[in-house]
Structure formats: C-alpha cells, structure tokens
Length: 331
Ligand SMILES: C[S@@+](CC[C@H](N)C(=O)[O-])C[C@H]1O[C@@H](n2cnc3c(N)ncnc32)[C@H](O)[C@@H]1O
Image: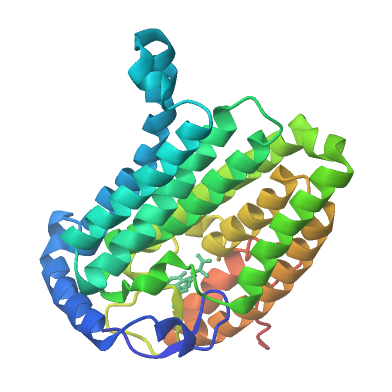
C-alpha cells in the first residue's frame, strides 16, 4: 500500500474518504492489488474493475426499454403496453430488477462497487434517453451523461492504472460536502431558471460549447491519469513511494497539472452546458481557488520527492491553469 496520505484531490481531510472503506473491503482490495501486480504487466483488469464494467453496462441497459417500446408500435400490442407512463414504470422496474440481481450475485464490498457502478450506468442511460427525446430537457440529459461518466471513469481508470489505491472513494462520489453542495446548487439553479426564464435554457450554441469543454476536459484528465499510471493517486501523497517516478512526458510535457486543468474546464463546462450563469461564476472562482491551493501543496511534496529534477521541470513547463504559477521557490 502507498503511504503518506494527506488530502484527496478535492481537498478532503485524509480520514474522510476512508469512511466508506471497511476493513474487510481493504483486505479484499489488498488481495486484489496483489493479483493486479501481475495484472498490470499483463494488462488484466482487477476483479473490482471488471465487476464495475458489467454493472455499469447492466445499469445502462435502461436505454433498451424505450427502444423496445418504440419497436412496439410496429410490432404489436405487447410492446405498446410499455409506452407512456407504463414505459416509465418499466424503467423503474428494470432498475429494481437489476439492483436485485446484483444483490444476489455480489456480496459485501463487491456489491458496494456493483451498486455504485450500476447506479452511474442507469444515470448515464437515462441521460442518453433524455438527450435523444425531443423535449426542453436535452441539455440536462447531456449533463447527466457527463456527470455519471466522469464518476464512473474515475473508478475504472484507477482500477487500470493504480489498483493498489482503488477503493469505493475512487468513484469520487463522497469526497466533500462542498462538492455535493455545488452539484445540488447547479440542479436547483437549472430548475428555477427553467421555470422563470425558459428561453435561457434553450441557448443551443452555449450548451454545445459547454459540451465541448466537458469532452476536452474529460479527455485531458483521463489522458493525464493514463500517462502518470501508478504515480497518479486521488489522495495526494506526502511520502514518496519507492516506485514513484517523476512524469514529464505525454500531456505532462504541455502542463504540470493536466488532470487538474482537465477537471477545471470539465467542471465549468458543465455549468456552461446547463446555461447556469450563477453557478458558472461560483464554479469558476471556487475551483480556481481550490486548484491554486492544491497545486502549491502538491508541489511542496514533489520538490521534496524529486528535488532539482522537479525544479527544472517547473522552470520549463507551466501549471496549465490561468494565473496559477504554482509554489514559488527562491533561487
Ligand atoms: C490527483 S494526482 C494529480 C496529478 C497532477 N497534479 C495533475 O494534475 O495531473 C496527485 C498525485 O500525483 C502526483 N504527481 C503530480 N505531478 C506528478 C508528476 N509530474 N510526476 C509524478 N507524480 C506526480 C503527486 O505526488 C500526487 O500524489
């Protein structure tokens, strides 16, 4: 296990992310991490990762319900039964059945992984359905897809690159009160403004710009995780692991903190997508301040770990975030 946890990538106290992480789960995870040592070499995904994929796709299967429904109008009365309000009931029943199935198949910690992945898969599937239905909720559907995919892929990519650090917290679903408040605020703003100024929520090109920001931000963050490999950890390390090496290639050659840059633009992109002016301002200020502090704190450790090599890298490559120079070092 890696040591020296300080705070997670969102600034939670180091103890908080481990609330969900039961001792039993940690034992299973360690066993799975042992298996993954060879797995990493052979590129085989750890058990938790594989279960999460199955569960995510099972959840996403919710998209098939309306497909069957729409086929129904051509095929016959059996399928027509599922249309309208019945279609929605069918979706609810599907989710219930899948969750019940997971409860039977997986026990204990694996079930906790499966439930979360399935929930995110359902949210992604429902987001797709909303996106492709001709209503005024299209952009909210995009948002649901963005949010659920972000959280699920954080877990999956961690399972691939650094299975030793994998835990339920790798979904980043429970990392801070501030994050939850920010998410709920954006939903509330969207609903209130949709009610009061419905035309504000129909600015197609603005939402499209938001979608582009989300896609680029997500792409950059996941590229950074895949490039850094086992050197990437959701929990910022303050003690150097033996295997920890300085990464300066790939996206790290363009900026020192690509995963933070990606997350920054992803998060404000979600608010552009929802056409939420208040949250757009709030998200921009809050995440800028957060990443400024996070980067300074992280760079103190990185200088401590890699000394002159990091200072040299720092001189050549910028942080990637506007007006954030990183830790100042007196020469
Ligand atoms: C959440 S990751 C963020 C990585 C980086 N700040 C970024 O935005 O891509 C935090 C962990 O990555 C490690 N880290 C950050 N930059 C690194 C680099 N260039 N090479 C190796 N490890 C790095 C830190 O030690 C820390 O434990």
